[in-house]
Image 1 (cartoon, one colour):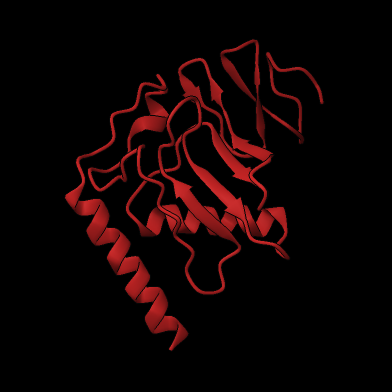
Image 2 (cartoon, helix red, strand yellow):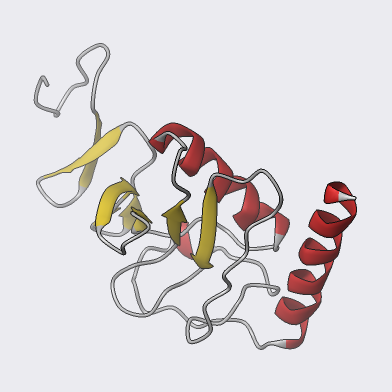
Length: 148
């Protein structure tokens, strides 16, 4: 029964996304803006939460400087919420866009897990250095990046 509801929710969202025009982004991150034509519009929050999810997908491309926005479900870890958010983004036919953020249930920013850096969208586990270089948060040193 739960799986049927999750499939129904996913199918309904995919149908809703497919009839909307693709969102036009003005964030300026060419790598981050390769979303499919099924991307949800920025003006309409999605509010998608499949059964057993740890996050609610609010936007694939939120208005303003935020790209992908999810809200953590109480009782889930941040890592599980981010994983759930990425899964839901893929399920509705979108792409994770920068800045990708996780909000608390009260709406406070918990984590920016992908961030804009010049014309790039830094991956998870990286940070933006000097406004144009994505550097690893941990691990071996990389030329041109500060040691963390």
